[in-house]
Amino acid sequence: MIVFDIIAFVCLGLLLALGIAVLLLCRAPYKASRFLTPSRLLAAGVFFIAVIFFFPYYNDEFLHFSALPRIWESLWSSVHHAVRLFVIDTDLGEFAASVNRPLYSVTATILFLIAPLLTAGVILSFFEGFASYRKCFMRRRNDAYIFSELSEKSLALASDLAKNHPAAVIIFTDVFEEEGERSFELKEKAKEMGAVCFKKDMATLDFSFFSHASALYFFAIGEDESENITQTFALCRRSDDYAKQKNVVLYVFTREIENELLLSNLPESHIVVRRVDDDRALVHRNLFDSGEELFKHAIPTADGKKLIRAVVVGTGGHGTEMLRALPWFCQMEGYRIEIHAFDRDASARDRFTLLAPELMSEKNNGVYVHDEAQYKIEFHAGISVDDASFTRELAKIGTPTYVFISMGNDARNVRTAVVLRRFFRQIHAPFDPVIHAIVYDTKSKGILDHAKNWKGKEYGIRFIGDLEEIFSERVILLGDLEAEALKTHLSYGADVDSFYRYEYNYRSSMASALHLHLRKKLGIAYFEKEELTEEERDLLERVEHNRWNAYMRAEGYVYSGSPESDSRDDLALMHHNLVPFDELSEEDKRKDSIVGSRKS
Image 1: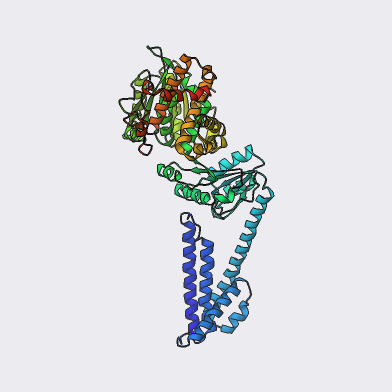
Image 2 (image 1 turned 30 degrees about the vertical axis):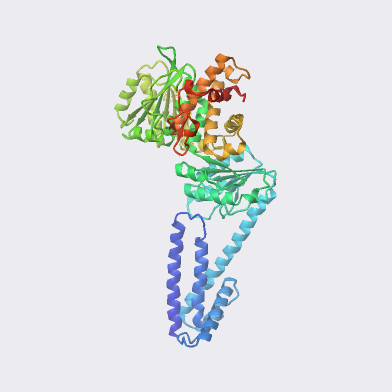
Protein backbone atom coordinates (compact mmCIF):
# COMPACT_ATOMS: atom_id res chain seq x y z
CA MET A 1 0.00 0.00 0.00
CA ILE A 2 3.02 2.28 0.26
CA VAL A 3 2.75 2.71 -3.55
CA PHE A 4 -0.49 4.69 -3.05
CA ASP A 5 1.26 7.16 -0.75
CA ILE A 6 4.15 7.58 -3.19
CA ILE A 7 1.78 8.22 -6.11
CA ALA A 8 -0.27 10.63 -3.98
CA PHE A 9 2.89 12.56 -3.05
CA VAL A 10 4.04 12.69 -6.69
CA CYS A 11 0.60 13.89 -7.85
CA LEU A 12 0.50 16.63 -5.22
CA GLY A 13 3.92 17.81 -6.40
CA LEU A 14 2.76 17.78 -10.01
CA LEU A 15 -0.36 19.77 -9.09
CA LEU A 16 1.78 22.38 -7.37
CA ALA A 17 4.11 22.60 -10.38
CA LEU A 18 1.09 22.85 -12.68
CA GLY A 19 -0.33 25.70 -10.62
CA ILE A 20 2.97 27.63 -10.83
CA ALA A 21 3.18 27.03 -14.60
CA VAL A 22 -0.38 28.32 -15.11
CA LEU A 23 0.37 31.46 -13.08
CA LEU A 24 3.53 32.11 -15.11
CA LEU A 25 1.64 31.63 -18.36
CA CYS A 26 -1.03 34.08 -17.21
CA ARG A 27 1.69 36.71 -16.75
CA ALA A 28 3.52 35.84 -19.98
CA PRO A 29 3.35 38.11 -23.07
CA TYR A 30 0.58 37.46 -25.57
CA LYS A 31 1.10 34.54 -27.94
CA ALA A 32 -0.23 35.03 -31.45
CA SER A 33 -1.47 31.42 -31.84
CA ARG A 34 -3.11 31.22 -28.40
CA PHE A 35 -2.60 27.43 -28.52
CA LEU A 36 -1.03 27.14 -25.08
CA THR A 37 -3.54 29.04 -22.95
CA PRO A 38 -3.70 28.81 -19.12
CA SER A 39 -7.08 27.02 -19.24
CA ARG A 40 -5.84 24.44 -21.76
CA LEU A 41 -2.65 23.82 -19.81
CA LEU A 42 -4.60 23.40 -16.58
CA ALA A 43 -7.13 20.98 -18.10
CA ALA A 44 -4.48 18.87 -19.84
CA GLY A 45 -2.28 18.84 -16.74
CA VAL A 46 -5.08 17.75 -14.39
CA PHE A 47 -6.12 15.01 -16.81
CA PHE A 48 -2.54 13.69 -17.04
CA ILE A 49 -2.13 13.76 -13.26
CA ALA A 50 -5.47 11.97 -12.81
CA VAL A 51 -4.32 9.16 -15.11
CA ILE A 52 -1.17 8.71 -13.00
CA PHE A 53 -3.24 8.92 -9.80
CA PHE A 54 -5.69 6.18 -10.79
CA PHE A 55 -3.06 3.79 -12.13
CA PRO A 56 -2.16 2.01 -8.85
CA TYR A 57 -5.87 1.74 -8.04
CA TYR A 58 -6.33 -0.45 -11.10
CA ASN A 59 -3.05 -2.31 -10.82
CA ASP A 60 -2.11 -3.39 -7.30
CA GLU A 61 0.88 -5.12 -8.87
CA PHE A 62 2.24 -1.72 -10.02
CA LEU A 63 5.87 -2.72 -9.45
CA HIS A 64 5.64 -5.97 -11.40
CA PHE A 65 6.47 -4.70 -14.88
CA SER A 66 6.66 -8.22 -16.22
CA ALA A 67 2.86 -8.30 -16.31
CA LEU A 68 2.70 -6.23 -19.50
CA PRO A 69 -0.95 -7.03 -20.46
CA ARG A 70 -2.10 -6.06 -16.94
CA ILE A 71 -0.29 -2.70 -17.20
CA TRP A 72 -2.02 -1.79 -20.48
CA GLU A 73 -5.37 -2.81 -19.06
CA SER A 74 -4.74 -0.68 -15.98
CA LEU A 75 -3.61 2.28 -18.11
CA TRP A 76 -6.80 2.30 -20.18
CA SER A 77 -8.88 1.91 -17.04
CA SER A 78 -7.07 4.89 -15.53
CA VAL A 79 -7.74 6.98 -18.64
CA HIS A 80 -11.40 5.99 -18.53
CA HIS A 81 -11.70 6.93 -14.85
CA ALA A 82 -10.00 10.29 -15.54
CA VAL A 83 -12.63 11.00 -18.20
CA ARG A 84 -15.39 10.04 -15.72
CA LEU A 85 -13.80 12.43 -13.24
CA PHE A 86 -14.30 15.35 -15.63
CA VAL A 87 -17.92 14.43 -16.44
CA ILE A 88 -18.77 13.92 -12.73
CA ASP A 89 -19.51 10.20 -13.15
CA THR A 90 -17.65 8.87 -10.12
CA ASP A 91 -18.17 8.92 -6.34
CA LEU A 92 -15.46 10.41 -4.13
CA GLY A 93 -16.65 8.76 -0.88
CA GLU A 94 -16.79 5.29 -2.37
CA PHE A 95 -13.41 5.70 -4.01
CA ALA A 96 -11.67 7.01 -0.86
CA ALA A 97 -13.18 4.21 1.31
CA SER A 98 -11.90 1.54 -1.06
CA VAL A 99 -8.30 2.74 -0.69
CA ASN A 100 -8.29 3.98 2.92
CA ARG A 101 -4.94 5.86 2.72
CA PRO A 102 -5.11 9.42 4.18
CA LEU A 103 -2.65 11.09 1.79
CA TYR A 104 -4.20 9.35 -1.21
CA SER A 105 -7.69 10.41 -0.07
CA VAL A 106 -6.63 14.06 0.29
CA THR A 107 -5.19 14.03 -3.24
CA ALA A 108 -8.36 12.37 -4.53
CA THR A 109 -10.46 15.13 -2.92
CA ILE A 110 -8.43 17.83 -4.69
CA LEU A 111 -8.74 16.13 -8.09
CA PHE A 112 -12.46 15.41 -7.60
CA LEU A 113 -13.00 19.14 -6.95
CA ILE A 114 -10.80 20.62 -9.68
CA ALA A 115 -11.93 18.45 -12.63
CA PRO A 116 -15.69 19.27 -12.44
CA LEU A 117 -14.87 22.97 -12.07
CA LEU A 118 -12.82 22.82 -15.26
CA THR A 119 -15.69 21.04 -17.01
CA ALA A 120 -18.13 23.70 -15.84
CA GLY A 121 -15.77 26.39 -17.14
CA VAL A 122 -15.67 24.75 -20.58
CA ILE A 123 -19.47 24.53 -20.69
CA LEU A 124 -19.90 28.16 -19.64
CA SER A 125 -17.28 29.20 -22.16
CA PHE A 126 -19.15 27.34 -24.91
CA PHE A 127 -22.44 29.02 -24.03
CA GLU A 128 -20.69 32.39 -23.75
CA GLY A 129 -19.27 31.97 -27.27
CA PHE A 130 -22.66 30.78 -28.51
CA ALA A 131 -24.32 33.85 -26.96
CA SER A 132 -21.80 36.15 -28.68
CA TYR A 133 -22.48 34.55 -32.06
CA ARG A 134 -26.23 34.79 -31.42
CA LYS A 135 -25.96 38.54 -30.73
CA CYS A 136 -24.00 39.07 -33.95
CA PHE A 137 -26.35 36.89 -36.00
CA MET A 138 -29.41 38.80 -34.80
CA ARG A 139 -27.83 41.95 -36.26
CA ARG A 140 -26.24 40.34 -39.29
CA ARG A 141 -27.68 42.93 -41.69
CA ASN A 142 -25.82 45.78 -40.00
CA ASP A 143 -22.24 46.92 -40.56
CA ALA A 144 -19.68 45.55 -38.09
CA TYR A 145 -16.52 47.00 -36.56
CA ILE A 146 -14.26 44.20 -35.31
CA PHE A 147 -11.24 44.85 -33.06
CA SER A 148 -8.29 42.55 -32.41
CA GLU A 149 -8.28 43.32 -28.68
CA LEU A 150 -9.99 45.30 -25.94
CA SER A 151 -7.72 48.17 -24.88
CA GLU A 152 -7.94 51.89 -24.17
CA LYS A 153 -7.15 52.63 -27.83
CA SER A 154 -9.63 50.19 -29.34
CA LEU A 155 -12.31 51.24 -26.84
CA ALA A 156 -11.82 54.93 -27.70
CA LEU A 157 -12.18 54.24 -31.43
CA ALA A 158 -15.10 51.88 -30.89
CA SER A 159 -16.91 54.46 -28.73
CA ASP A 160 -16.62 57.07 -31.48
CA LEU A 161 -17.79 54.62 -34.13
CA ALA A 162 -20.74 53.53 -31.98
CA LYS A 163 -21.73 57.17 -31.51
CA ASN A 164 -21.49 57.94 -35.23
CA HIS A 165 -23.05 54.65 -36.38
CA PRO A 166 -25.52 53.54 -33.68
CA ALA A 167 -26.88 50.67 -35.79
CA ALA A 168 -23.44 49.07 -36.28
CA VAL A 169 -22.22 46.03 -34.35
CA ILE A 170 -19.11 46.62 -32.22
CA ILE A 171 -17.06 43.45 -31.66
CA PHE A 172 -13.99 42.94 -29.48
CA THR A 173 -11.96 39.74 -29.82
CA ASP A 174 -9.29 38.12 -27.66
CA VAL A 175 -11.14 39.25 -24.52
CA PHE A 176 -10.21 37.12 -21.52
CA GLU A 177 -11.21 37.23 -17.88
CA GLU A 178 -8.15 38.91 -16.43
CA GLU A 179 -7.55 40.22 -12.96
CA GLY A 180 -7.05 43.92 -12.36
CA GLU A 181 -9.14 47.04 -12.01
CA ARG A 182 -8.24 48.40 -15.45
CA SER A 183 -9.29 45.20 -17.22
CA PHE A 184 -12.58 45.22 -15.36
CA GLU A 185 -13.23 48.87 -16.29
CA LEU A 186 -12.58 48.19 -19.98
CA LYS A 187 -14.96 45.23 -20.02
CA GLU A 188 -17.65 47.22 -18.22
CA LYS A 189 -17.36 50.07 -20.74
CA ALA A 190 -17.57 47.57 -23.60
CA LYS A 191 -20.78 46.15 -22.09
CA GLU A 192 -22.23 49.64 -21.63
CA MET A 193 -21.90 50.37 -25.36
CA GLY A 194 -23.52 47.02 -26.18
CA ALA A 195 -20.37 45.51 -27.67
CA VAL A 196 -20.02 41.78 -28.33
CA CYS A 197 -16.92 40.09 -26.90
CA PHE A 198 -15.20 36.90 -28.10
CA LYS A 199 -12.33 35.04 -26.49
CA LYS A 200 -10.92 33.82 -29.79
CA ASP A 201 -8.58 35.79 -32.04
CA MET A 202 -9.99 38.06 -34.71
CA ALA A 203 -8.17 36.10 -37.42
CA THR A 204 -9.64 32.74 -36.35
CA LEU A 205 -13.27 33.81 -36.04
CA ASP A 206 -15.62 33.62 -39.03
CA PHE A 207 -17.92 36.61 -39.59
CA SER A 208 -19.01 35.66 -43.10
CA PHE A 209 -22.55 35.05 -41.77
CA PHE A 210 -23.07 38.83 -41.91
CA SER A 211 -25.24 39.96 -44.80
CA HIS A 212 -23.50 40.41 -48.14
CA ALA A 213 -24.72 44.01 -48.09
CA SER A 214 -23.02 44.65 -44.74
CA ALA A 215 -19.61 46.28 -44.51
CA LEU A 216 -17.03 44.62 -42.25
CA TYR A 217 -14.23 46.74 -40.79
CA PHE A 218 -11.40 44.91 -39.03
CA PHE A 219 -8.88 46.69 -36.80
CA ALA A 220 -5.53 45.02 -36.00
CA ILE A 221 -4.87 47.51 -33.22
CA GLY A 222 -2.72 45.64 -30.69
CA GLU A 223 0.37 47.08 -29.01
CA ASP A 224 2.46 44.29 -30.53
CA GLU A 225 2.95 45.40 -34.15
CA SER A 226 4.34 42.04 -35.26
CA GLU A 227 1.14 40.41 -34.04
CA ASN A 228 -0.91 42.95 -35.99
CA ILE A 229 0.98 41.91 -39.12
CA THR A 230 0.49 38.21 -38.33
CA GLN A 231 -3.26 38.70 -38.00
CA THR A 232 -3.35 40.72 -41.22
CA PHE A 233 -1.72 37.91 -43.20
CA ALA A 234 -4.00 35.33 -41.55
CA LEU A 235 -7.13 37.30 -42.50
CA CYS A 236 -5.94 37.83 -46.07
CA ARG A 237 -5.33 34.10 -46.48
CA ARG A 238 -8.95 33.52 -45.42
CA SER A 239 -10.31 36.27 -47.67
CA ASP A 240 -12.35 33.77 -49.72
CA ASP A 241 -14.64 33.46 -46.69
CA TYR A 242 -15.62 37.09 -47.30
CA ALA A 243 -15.70 37.01 -51.10
CA LYS A 244 -19.42 37.78 -51.21
CA GLN A 245 -19.24 40.71 -48.81
CA LYS A 246 -19.52 44.03 -50.63
CA ASN A 247 -16.97 45.84 -48.47
CA VAL A 248 -14.32 44.36 -46.18
CA VAL A 249 -11.59 46.67 -44.92
CA LEU A 250 -8.73 45.87 -42.55
CA TYR A 251 -6.92 48.68 -40.72
CA VAL A 252 -3.55 47.50 -39.46
CA PHE A 253 -1.79 49.75 -36.95
CA THR A 254 1.96 49.94 -37.41
CA ARG A 255 4.65 52.62 -37.58
CA GLU A 256 7.67 50.45 -38.33
CA ILE A 257 9.11 50.60 -41.86
CA GLU A 258 9.81 46.85 -41.94
CA ASN A 259 6.10 46.22 -41.46
CA GLU A 260 5.39 48.48 -44.43
CA LEU A 261 7.58 46.16 -46.51
CA LEU A 262 5.72 43.11 -45.23
CA LEU A 263 2.34 44.64 -46.05
CA SER A 264 3.41 45.33 -49.62
CA ASN A 265 3.74 41.54 -50.05
CA LEU A 266 0.32 40.50 -48.79
CA PRO A 267 -1.36 37.60 -50.62
CA GLU A 268 -4.08 38.46 -53.13
CA SER A 269 -7.36 38.92 -51.29
CA HIS A 270 -10.80 40.48 -51.37
CA ILE A 271 -9.92 42.50 -48.27
CA VAL A 272 -8.81 46.11 -48.61
CA VAL A 273 -5.84 46.61 -46.28
CA ARG A 274 -4.97 50.04 -44.95
CA ARG A 275 -1.88 50.72 -42.89
CA VAL A 276 -2.45 53.20 -40.07
CA ASP A 277 0.35 55.27 -38.57
CA ASP A 278 -1.52 57.14 -35.84
CA ASP A 279 1.27 59.75 -35.49
CA ARG A 280 0.98 60.69 -39.15
CA ALA A 281 -2.82 60.41 -39.09
CA LEU A 282 -3.10 62.95 -36.27
CA VAL A 283 -0.70 65.42 -37.89
CA HIS A 284 -2.48 65.21 -41.25
CA ARG A 285 -5.90 65.57 -39.61
CA ASN A 286 -4.70 68.63 -37.69
CA LEU A 287 -3.44 70.20 -40.94
CA PHE A 288 -6.71 69.29 -42.65
CA ASP A 289 -8.77 70.95 -39.90
CA SER A 290 -6.70 74.05 -39.18
CA GLY A 291 -3.84 74.18 -41.69
CA GLU A 292 -4.85 77.66 -42.84
CA GLU A 293 -3.79 78.97 -39.40
CA LEU A 294 -0.18 78.55 -40.52
CA PHE A 295 -0.77 81.33 -43.05
CA LYS A 296 -2.65 83.59 -40.62
CA HIS A 297 0.34 85.66 -39.48
CA ALA A 298 2.65 85.14 -42.47
CA ILE A 299 5.33 87.85 -42.42
CA PRO A 300 5.94 90.04 -45.53
CA THR A 301 9.53 89.85 -46.82
CA ALA A 302 11.69 92.26 -48.84
CA ASP A 303 11.24 90.27 -52.07
CA GLY A 304 7.45 90.44 -51.93
CA LYS A 305 6.90 86.96 -50.48
CA LYS A 306 5.23 86.06 -47.22
CA LEU A 307 7.18 84.03 -44.65
CA ILE A 308 5.67 81.27 -42.51
CA ARG A 309 8.00 80.78 -39.55
CA ALA A 310 7.16 77.52 -37.77
CA VAL A 311 8.72 76.14 -34.59
CA VAL A 312 8.55 72.42 -33.81
CA VAL A 313 9.49 71.54 -30.23
CA GLY A 314 10.34 67.85 -29.88
CA THR A 315 11.18 65.60 -32.81
CA GLY A 316 9.68 62.32 -31.60
CA GLY A 317 6.83 60.62 -33.45
CA HIS A 318 4.43 63.54 -33.88
CA GLY A 319 7.21 66.13 -34.17
CA THR A 320 8.96 64.21 -36.94
CA GLU A 321 5.72 63.81 -38.88
CA MET A 322 5.05 67.53 -38.59
CA LEU A 323 8.60 68.28 -39.79
CA ARG A 324 8.06 66.07 -42.81
CA ALA A 325 4.65 67.55 -43.62
CA LEU A 326 5.26 71.30 -43.30
CA PRO A 327 7.72 71.73 -46.21
CA TRP A 328 5.26 70.33 -48.79
CA PHE A 329 2.05 71.47 -47.13
CA CYS A 330 3.10 75.13 -47.17
CA GLN A 331 4.18 75.24 -50.81
CA MET A 332 1.94 78.00 -52.14
CA GLU A 333 2.51 80.80 -54.64
CA GLY A 334 3.79 83.88 -52.83
CA TYR A 335 4.80 82.01 -49.67
CA ARG A 336 7.84 80.28 -48.28
CA ILE A 337 8.29 78.43 -45.02
CA GLU A 338 11.08 78.47 -42.47
CA ILE A 339 11.02 75.70 -39.86
CA HIS A 340 13.00 75.67 -36.61
CA ALA A 341 13.18 72.31 -34.85
CA PHE A 342 14.16 72.15 -31.16
CA ASP A 343 15.22 68.96 -29.43
CA ARG A 344 17.42 68.21 -26.43
CA ASP A 345 18.97 65.29 -28.32
CA ALA A 346 22.19 66.54 -29.93
CA SER A 347 21.80 64.02 -32.76
CA ALA A 348 18.27 65.12 -33.70
CA ARG A 349 19.34 66.64 -37.01
CA ASP A 350 21.28 63.54 -38.03
CA ARG A 351 18.31 61.30 -37.18
CA PHE A 352 15.99 63.36 -39.33
CA THR A 353 18.51 63.65 -42.16
CA LEU A 354 18.68 59.86 -42.34
CA LEU A 355 14.91 59.80 -42.96
CA ALA A 356 14.91 62.60 -45.55
CA PRO A 357 18.46 63.14 -46.88
CA GLU A 358 17.62 65.26 -49.93
CA LEU A 359 15.14 67.39 -48.00
CA MET A 360 18.02 68.39 -45.71
CA SER A 361 20.74 68.62 -48.36
CA GLU A 362 22.54 71.94 -48.86
CA LYS A 363 21.43 71.89 -52.48
CA ASN A 364 17.75 72.23 -51.52
CA ASN A 365 17.39 73.26 -47.88
CA GLY A 366 17.13 77.05 -47.67
CA VAL A 367 18.03 77.56 -51.33
CA TYR A 368 15.22 79.66 -52.80
CA VAL A 369 14.98 79.01 -56.52
CA HIS A 370 11.98 80.21 -58.54
CA ASP A 371 10.89 76.80 -59.83
CA GLU A 372 11.76 74.76 -56.74
CA ALA A 373 10.25 74.12 -53.31
CA GLN A 374 10.53 77.18 -51.03
CA TYR A 375 11.51 75.99 -47.56
CA LYS A 376 14.26 76.08 -44.95
CA ILE A 377 14.70 73.64 -42.04
CA GLU A 378 17.06 74.57 -39.22
CA PHE A 379 17.75 72.37 -36.21
CA HIS A 380 18.48 73.66 -32.72
CA ALA A 381 19.66 70.39 -31.23
CA GLY A 382 20.96 69.82 -27.73
CA ILE A 383 18.74 72.54 -26.27
CA SER A 384 16.39 71.81 -23.38
CA VAL A 385 13.10 73.65 -22.98
CA ASP A 386 13.72 73.64 -19.23
CA ASP A 387 16.45 76.28 -19.24
CA ALA A 388 16.97 79.83 -20.54
CA SER A 389 18.96 78.71 -23.60
CA PHE A 390 15.64 77.78 -25.19
CA THR A 391 14.12 81.28 -25.04
CA ARG A 392 17.46 82.88 -25.94
CA GLU A 393 17.56 80.81 -29.11
CA LEU A 394 13.94 81.65 -29.86
CA ALA A 395 14.67 85.37 -29.53
CA LYS A 396 17.35 85.07 -32.22
CA ILE A 397 15.04 83.64 -34.88
CA GLY A 398 12.23 86.18 -34.52
CA THR A 399 8.55 85.73 -33.72
CA PRO A 400 7.21 82.44 -35.09
CA THR A 401 3.83 82.34 -36.79
CA TYR A 402 3.14 78.78 -35.64
CA VAL A 403 4.40 76.55 -32.79
CA PHE A 404 3.90 72.80 -32.50
CA ILE A 405 4.90 71.14 -29.20
CA SER A 406 5.29 67.38 -28.80
CA MET A 407 7.87 66.05 -26.35
CA GLY A 408 6.21 62.81 -25.29
CA ASN A 409 5.09 64.11 -21.91
CA ASP A 410 1.82 65.94 -21.30
CA ALA A 411 3.07 68.00 -18.36
CA ARG A 412 6.16 69.25 -20.22
CA ASN A 413 4.10 70.05 -23.31
CA VAL A 414 1.62 72.14 -21.31
CA ARG A 415 4.34 73.87 -19.32
CA THR A 416 6.30 74.72 -22.47
CA ALA A 417 3.19 76.07 -24.22
CA VAL A 418 2.42 78.35 -21.27
CA VAL A 419 6.06 79.52 -21.04
CA LEU A 420 6.08 80.36 -24.76
CA ARG A 421 2.81 82.26 -24.63
CA ARG A 422 4.20 84.31 -21.72
CA PHE A 423 7.55 84.81 -23.45
CA PHE A 424 6.01 86.14 -26.66
CA ARG A 425 3.97 88.64 -24.66
CA GLN A 426 7.04 89.72 -22.68
CA ILE A 427 9.06 90.52 -25.81
CA HIS A 428 6.06 92.41 -27.25
CA ALA A 429 5.66 90.14 -30.26
CA PRO A 430 3.63 91.86 -33.01
CA PHE A 431 1.03 89.06 -32.86
CA ASP A 432 0.17 85.98 -30.80
CA PRO A 433 1.64 82.96 -32.58
CA VAL A 434 -0.67 79.99 -33.10
CA ILE A 435 0.36 77.34 -30.53
CA HIS A 436 -0.67 73.68 -30.76
CA ALA A 437 0.46 71.28 -28.00
CA ILE A 438 -0.03 67.53 -27.71
CA VAL A 439 -1.89 66.36 -24.59
CA TYR A 440 -2.53 62.62 -24.63
CA ASP A 441 -4.71 62.34 -21.53
CA THR A 442 -8.35 63.02 -22.43
CA LYS A 443 -9.37 64.21 -18.95
CA SER A 444 -6.48 66.65 -18.77
CA LYS A 445 -7.25 68.00 -22.23
CA GLY A 446 -10.87 68.59 -21.26
CA ILE A 447 -9.75 70.68 -18.30
CA LEU A 448 -7.05 72.55 -20.26
CA ASP A 449 -9.31 73.54 -23.16
CA HIS A 450 -10.01 77.27 -22.84
CA ALA A 451 -7.61 77.48 -19.89
CA LYS A 452 -7.48 80.94 -18.28
CA ASN A 453 -5.18 82.74 -15.91
CA TRP A 454 -6.28 84.03 -12.50
CA LYS A 455 -7.75 87.14 -14.11
CA GLY A 456 -9.91 85.09 -16.44
CA LYS A 457 -7.87 85.68 -19.62
CA GLU A 458 -7.49 82.73 -21.97
CA TYR A 459 -4.02 81.53 -22.95
CA GLY A 460 -5.08 80.94 -26.53
CA ILE A 461 -3.37 77.54 -26.73
CA ARG A 462 -4.95 74.67 -28.63
CA PHE A 463 -4.36 71.27 -27.07
CA ILE A 464 -4.64 68.34 -29.48
CA GLY A 465 -3.87 64.64 -29.67
CA ASP A 466 -5.67 63.17 -26.68
CA LEU A 467 -6.60 59.49 -26.79
CA GLU A 468 -10.18 60.14 -27.88
CA GLU A 469 -9.07 62.49 -30.66
CA ILE A 470 -6.29 60.30 -32.02
CA PHE A 471 -8.40 57.13 -31.95
CA SER A 472 -11.50 58.57 -33.55
CA GLU A 473 -13.22 57.89 -36.85
CA ARG A 474 -12.24 61.23 -38.37
CA VAL A 475 -8.53 60.68 -37.62
CA ILE A 476 -8.14 56.94 -38.24
CA LEU A 477 -10.64 56.26 -41.03
CA LEU A 478 -10.12 59.67 -42.72
CA GLY A 479 -13.32 59.21 -44.70
CA ASP A 480 -13.62 62.70 -46.20
CA LEU A 481 -9.92 63.11 -46.91
CA GLU A 482 -9.61 59.55 -48.24
CA ALA A 483 -12.50 60.12 -50.65
CA GLU A 484 -10.75 63.20 -52.05
CA ALA A 485 -7.47 61.29 -52.28
CA LEU A 486 -9.12 58.48 -54.22
CA LYS A 487 -10.55 61.01 -56.70
CA THR A 488 -7.05 62.41 -57.23
CA HIS A 489 -5.63 58.93 -57.75
CA LEU A 490 -8.33 57.97 -60.25
CA SER A 491 -7.83 61.22 -62.18
CA TYR A 492 -4.43 59.88 -63.27
CA GLY A 493 -6.13 56.91 -64.96
CA ALA A 494 -5.26 54.47 -62.16
CA ASP A 495 -7.66 51.97 -60.58
CA VAL A 496 -9.12 51.68 -57.08
CA ASP A 497 -7.16 48.54 -56.19
CA SER A 498 -3.78 50.20 -56.76
CA PHE A 499 -4.85 53.07 -54.49
CA TYR A 500 -5.36 50.83 -51.47
CA ARG A 501 -2.85 48.11 -52.25
CA TYR A 502 0.28 50.23 -52.63
CA GLU A 503 1.37 52.48 -49.78
CA TYR A 504 3.18 54.83 -52.18
CA ASN A 505 -0.03 55.58 -54.12
CA TYR A 506 -2.16 55.96 -51.01
CA ARG A 507 0.21 58.33 -49.21
CA SER A 508 0.94 60.43 -52.28
CA SER A 509 -2.73 60.87 -53.11
CA MET A 510 -3.59 61.72 -49.50
CA ALA A 511 -0.94 64.46 -49.52
CA SER A 512 -2.31 65.85 -52.81
CA ALA A 513 -5.85 65.91 -51.43
CA LEU A 514 -4.67 67.59 -48.23
CA HIS A 515 -2.90 70.34 -50.17
CA LEU A 516 -5.90 70.82 -52.47
CA HIS A 517 -8.12 71.19 -49.39
CA LEU A 518 -5.80 73.96 -48.14
CA ARG A 519 -5.98 75.76 -51.50
CA LYS A 520 -9.76 75.83 -51.22
CA LYS A 521 -9.60 77.18 -47.67
CA LEU A 522 -7.21 79.94 -48.76
CA GLY A 523 -9.69 80.91 -51.45
CA ILE A 524 -7.53 80.25 -54.49
CA ALA A 525 -10.60 79.75 -56.67
CA TYR A 526 -9.06 79.17 -60.07
CA PHE A 527 -7.41 76.00 -58.85
CA GLU A 528 -10.86 74.40 -59.17
CA LYS A 529 -11.69 75.71 -62.65
CA GLU A 530 -12.51 73.33 -65.47
CA GLU A 531 -10.66 75.46 -68.02
CA LEU A 532 -7.43 77.25 -67.15
CA THR A 533 -5.69 80.08 -68.92
CA GLU A 534 -2.09 79.44 -69.93
CA GLU A 535 -0.88 81.62 -67.08
CA GLU A 536 -3.11 79.89 -64.54
CA ARG A 537 -2.08 76.46 -65.72
CA ASP A 538 1.61 77.33 -65.57
CA LEU A 539 1.24 78.68 -62.02
CA LEU A 540 -0.76 75.68 -60.86
CA GLU A 541 1.72 73.24 -62.36
CA ARG A 542 4.69 74.97 -60.76
CA VAL A 543 3.06 75.09 -57.33
CA GLU A 544 2.03 71.43 -57.58
CA HIS A 545 5.48 70.31 -58.72
CA ASN A 546 7.16 72.27 -55.94
CA ARG A 547 4.80 70.60 -53.46
CA TRP A 548 5.49 67.18 -54.98
CA ASN A 549 9.25 67.71 -54.85
CA ALA A 550 9.12 68.64 -51.16
CA TYR A 551 6.76 65.74 -50.43
CA MET A 552 8.93 63.15 -52.16
CA ARG A 553 12.03 64.38 -50.37
CA ALA A 554 10.16 64.25 -47.06
CA GLU A 555 9.35 60.60 -47.85
CA GLY A 556 13.07 59.92 -48.26
CA TYR A 557 13.34 60.02 -52.07
CA VAL A 558 16.41 61.40 -53.83
CA TYR A 559 17.09 62.32 -57.45
CA SER A 560 17.95 59.25 -59.53
CA GLY A 561 20.72 61.09 -61.38
CA SER A 562 19.08 60.88 -64.79
CA PRO A 563 15.92 62.38 -66.38
CA GLU A 564 15.17 59.01 -67.99
CA SER A 565 12.16 57.23 -66.47
CA ASP A 566 13.94 53.87 -66.37
CA SER A 567 16.36 55.32 -63.79
CA ARG A 568 13.54 55.42 -61.24
CA ASP A 569 14.10 52.91 -58.43
CA ASP A 570 11.42 52.85 -55.73
CA LEU A 571 13.32 50.22 -53.75
CA ALA A 572 16.20 52.66 -53.44
CA LEU A 573 13.81 55.65 -53.13
CA MET A 574 15.18 57.31 -56.29
CA HIS A 575 13.03 59.26 -58.75
CA HIS A 576 13.89 60.82 -62.10
CA ASN A 577 11.44 63.74 -61.77
CA LEU A 578 12.96 65.24 -58.62
CA VAL A 579 14.22 68.22 -60.61
CA PRO A 580 13.19 71.89 -61.06
CA PHE A 581 9.94 72.34 -62.98
CA ASP A 582 11.54 73.66 -66.17
CA GLU A 583 13.57 70.46 -66.53
CA LEU A 584 10.45 68.27 -66.75
CA SER A 585 9.12 66.90 -70.01
CA GLU A 586 5.95 68.54 -71.33
CA GLU A 587 4.02 65.36 -70.56
CA ASP A 588 5.11 65.41 -66.92
CA LYS A 589 4.32 69.12 -66.64
CA ARG A 590 0.74 68.45 -67.72
CA LYS A 591 0.39 65.82 -64.99
CA ASP A 592 0.91 68.56 -62.42
CA SER A 593 -2.18 70.46 -63.58
CA ILE A 594 -4.43 67.43 -62.98
CA VAL A 595 -4.33 68.11 -59.24
CA GLY A 596 -6.39 71.21 -58.61
CA SER A 597 -8.10 71.68 -61.95
CA ARG A 598 -10.04 68.45 -61.32
CA LYS A 599 -9.89 67.79 -65.05
CA SER A 600 -7.97 64.73 -66.16
